[in-house]
Image (tube, rainbow, N blue to C red; front, side, top):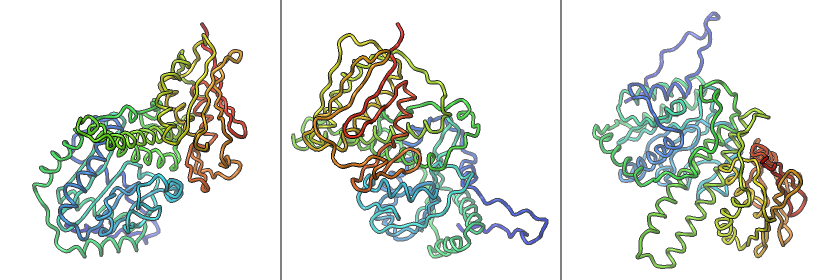
Length: 471
């Protein structure tokens, strides 16, 4: 296998148009040649992607004891095993906002992962992601004893995971990447060529694919689908048909990042729950596993809310929402036990109070559950241990008023106007407390899409008004 080396184009002639750089979407399409069309939705195909990454690294690369190699990925680093990242030379095509987001989300990354590179001594070169590259995951890995290319692609409802081991396809993929680098960053292109040549002769295992797919199937069988990973909103018909919606690169990257965080957490939670079904666990082990399960669920829901807020930013302002009669008091009573457990992990309590015989409101109960949980988390993060979160639901004319208050003053965690920094159109970041949360604007828009109106006051008080449903 070698770099194909695209023929020189006569770019010096004044009548010759400068060729467009090879896009990463072209590379995905090349990998998918002769592969049947997919039929998966986006969440299931991303579970396949994460399972494929785990299978590749844990079942094949680590047992080989890889000492050298190169990898190229987009739009986020795909490899995560420290032992591999220390030895392999990497390149990642990513939007420029990746650095800001990684800095802002540093406390949420696994131990050893840094914003400037990979993990535990690993590093990679960051290259610009261009218009037309797309944001679907892509990975090309070349080592002396294993070579593979992986990608996600396809329209909504026709998504698929492509994994290729055959030398002709991999050679073609390397040639496209070489052409891309030679045209956009000649120095990096030369470094890639030198790194490939330094690997020496490459061995290709013809039985690799036959061994890979059964191992992947075994991993997927252990990854029970999670309800919290189902799509929270549906794209508009225009978006589903592929019509241009001009999303910002920040939102596209944020959606990709939330997917990549939620999927492994859901896998961990599934494995933990399978262990909890055993009857021979010591009580201390069971308690620890239940605590981990709760933390995973909390972060899955948290990133699901971020994903929902990012999706909402794509929709035109004022787009009508499908709202239904919702028994808000009953919904709060159903959610209270889970919130109590969540707050208990931070030594906080919760109290609910309702006026009798409250009428239903107009909202979306499926999404309202997620958004209210996010508001409880956001409201309680600045409270000191021992404080009590108080929720009261009262009539207020043609609306119901849901008020959040606390028995203790909020610790010094300035709002966006007092010290928190905006991270794109959805998130705010407080460097003093390490708190990454939805911005006030994004939170207000979320409630507006659910028929509500959020009013925040200084200190520890906020209120959400919902319209009463007509009888």
